[in-house]
Image 1 (tube, rainbow, N blue to C red):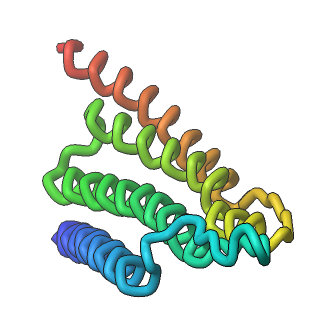
Image 2 (cartoon, rainbow, N blue to C red):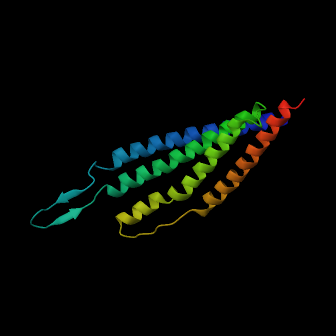
Image 3 (cartoon, rainbow, N blue to C red):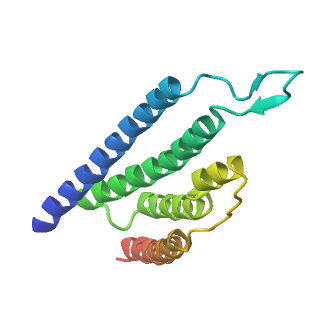
Length: 165
């Protein structure tokens, strides 16, 4: 009974976290719409001065990259919440949990690649290239992937035990 309460609390924490992240995306969109003037490239003083500025480029593209990262984190949170929901309902050795863990591992692998994307885009816009990779997401992804493989094997054993009389 105590575990079910803990699973319920954790489930709702992750659902609420996903909802707050969705609100964050809405806030970023509002800031992006208000803070930029919808010009990807503003060409001024041509041909006399030949001045080209890129006002608003950093805001639009970094905001879009940040939204992409947040969307992957929302998917991660939502799947973890669904895993806790299954644990709360005593669905432990089911294929759905294996699929959820696979999705969580994939989200972590994707985050390892794209989590530094907003910083990279901002650096490109200011001619400061710094391509980096986030290894902590890769390590956590490998741990979750290993747990998913254990869960796959446990599901096979549970199915075999179910058919044994």
